[in-house]
Length: 559
Image 1: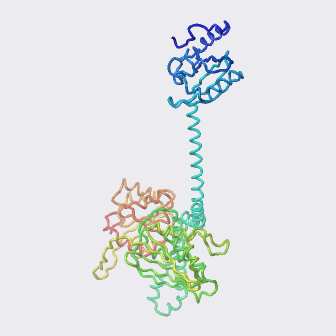
Image 2: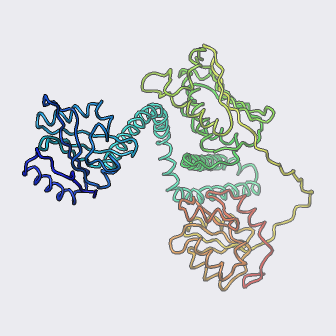
Image 3: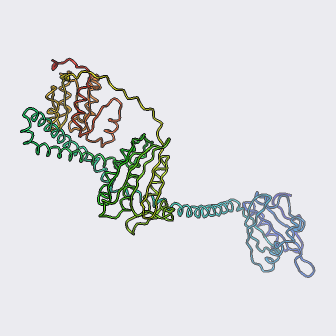
């Protein structure tokens, strides 16, 4: 029997119209990809449906997956016996009797496939269409599974978000806490060149004036010394003021690097002194500072972040002491070495803490300060920084007896170079040398000429191009001091030109910088072949660099 078949002989009870309708169905189903079967109702003498007989079945792929093999001419109870004991047989009977179609979705486990079944009345029986919806159902199941996964992920994300909310707020508060200092530091970095240039010639000229007054007093005796005493004192105070400006700019530039993650050897005492200088406005009206600072080895960490920890501890210590009674209160700084660790202590004579308070002080947002004065994040952040450096932050306190915060950090395993004591030699007069100053700030050149002019021959030019032209015809300078940032040709560009034209000259260059505030300048200064000094510099450094210059070159200016 072919794939599209009807019973070999038409039943006598079926009229001619039914036969024609069935034949039309056969022809139509030849081009229909959906599975289709037609079943005739089999009734008993009481006209009750007791079974169904397959009178048509197309042979498309989907039909083979539902019911493999030929079924036309067979009864439902024979071809699909399990259908007789399920609701399927009841549904088939209802469709015949009520003449209403029924739709359902059926899963066939043997073929792992889904079909949408539509049962419709057809003559005295039913026609069942099977539409393969396996792909649609797989997509739907995948969509549901994806939604379930997304829902699960959403719940996990919400839990994680709640867990991280505190951490995020800690980070935000840390940013806010340091923003003011960082802005000031970045400003200092940007204008450092403009500050340090005039500061260099101010400090240099003050030094020259003090030197010359000192020599004049030696020549003229005690009477002149008394007359110049106030002048010398005024110049000394001006020198100290200029040094304070230099220190402040340097400290602010250090703070500008507080977001760096770079680690390296850190001088603990230097970081502590830096933090103390920044905290003094909070301390001076509350307590005296007592230093018990023993020399300690360096530790591995980030200088700016360690300085911020010390600054936070010092400010906390000051805030634990009432204002207006500084003579009876003290903040004591202690450094010592314990085996392989450096210990730094910040002790105060403030109100102290109970054991209950100490149990919570390192928890985020816990604070004993009045509303608006504390966030409860300073100590948790400090603890995180110190632990990130491999150390620990501890506290000891009693109510009414003050507190002690202890920073413990591991020592770097450094091999210290032995100190070599030079043999004593008879002091000789310095050799006269030729020095070239390249700086577009005229006052810098004038100041350095005064510093060096008594002992050395000094030439001054005010641009990189002038220097390039001079060095092309006169290569007899023993030492060259060159400003890094100049308008017409920077020190970096001059260095690049000489690298091609007179490379042997570069070892005699010392670059003067008020602050490498561009990426190019910082990269240039980091080169091993580049020597530099920061403005403002001390006269002793300049004279020492001239004295240690390589042996004299021969040239037009040589004597």
